Image (cartoon, rainbow over all chains, first blue to last red; front, top):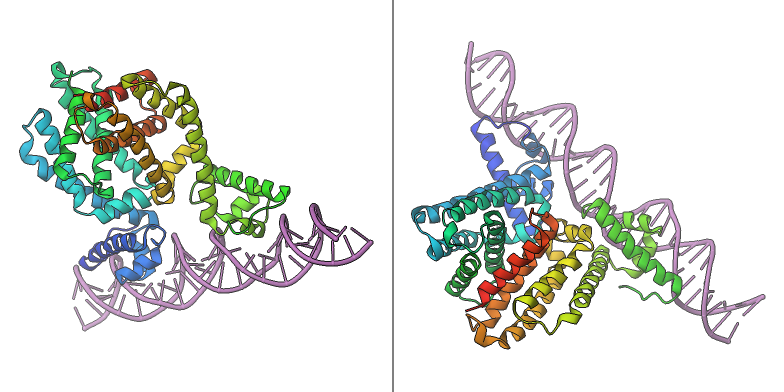
Amino acid sequence: MRKQPQQKRSRAMVERIISAGREVLLGDGYDGFSTNRIAARAGVSPGSLYQYFPNKEAIIDAVLEQYGDDLAERVAAALGDRLGDTGPRMIRDTADALLTALEKDVGLLRVSTEELPATRHGDRLAALERRVQELCVAYLAGRRDLLRSSDHATSAWVLVLCVETLTVRYVLDAPDIPRDVFLDELTALCQGYLAR
Amino acid sequence: MRKQPQQKRSRAMVERIISAGREVLLGDGYDGFSTNRIAARAGVSPGSLYQYFPNKEAIIDAVLEQYGDDLAERVAAALGDRLGDTGPRMIRDTADALLTALEKDVGLLRVSTEELPATRHGDRLAALERRVQELCVAYLAGRRDLLRSSDHATSAWVLVLCVETLTVRYVLDAPDIPRDVFLDELTALCQGYLAR
DNA sequence: TGGTGACGCGAGCGATCGCTCGCATACAAT
DNA sequence: ATTGTATGCGAGCGATCGCTCGCGTCACCA
């Protein structure tokens, strides 16, 4: 960010630009994501846009950061009252929370995963995956006597990747699988992989 | 393709253009994948390029089709003499073959999955996944009495997605997991999910 | 109320893009 | 050798891109 907006009206403009960026991304795709178009959509001149964003990439970063924060917040909220669960119940609730969060804005999820080059949000996603893997390792360590493998890092890597891919693809591809069946299958997958 | 190359020299040019396309994709990324640059790299004029390719997209399609065919050929070759296997052994051999095939050209795999918008090769990949899922359903149907679930379509969907994601990410991210450990884990994942 | 810095504007620059077209050349059939 | 066609060339068109800059406007403090 090139300059910090100080007055109320400039802060509002930055928000309008980010919203316009999201709308352009949804409506015109990544190819149509041009600064001129964003500025027009936000009702702002290109020059004004560049007062607060150093380049086009910064705008898309802001859009994705807002989306990522929103997702994390939803997952945390849906999961907050179930922290005590363990075993299959906990796996299922976690997947359910993730699924619900992803379903809130399928359009942006689709654009992010299918239209955006993965390099654009890869770092952010990789960092998130690493954090979740660490949480997963801690959880596994607390139940080591029930597990097939003692290599918790590898197990966490496998689990996180599978759950992430399956939930995202379930939301995007809408396969002909009822939601509760999908959650049962996902739970069976994790449980069958972990249990000895 | 706008016109079919009839003489030997024009067929050679088409091949040079596809090769140049792959090189530009690897060297300059998807952003640098411009028709002018491809023509220059191939030692060909932009006009000549457009005699055989209707537009830029057709070139990238040709590159990806060649890569896809190459991959399929490698997997089939590595798997050809193990068609009789069943159970964990068969799962492991399949994953091994896939892994070996993917490792042959990590650069192009990385560009395809991380830099290219998924929409660009999504149809081709989706079609391949569907075919593999059908094969998988047939395999599962032949072993139905050993399986936890009788919904083979859903099981195949889960399995194919997991194996695909995990192998690709293993090759691209090179996590600190020995190759045989990874194959064991993948086998355990599938086996634990399928077995009753 | 006057002044000062933050704010916002929009024409347009320089570069690059995908792609075309008129023309020269190489090949194959006669 | 001549002719018809397939091939290849490359300057450059029209469009769009990311981004700048000089200038007017507005909010806030003295």
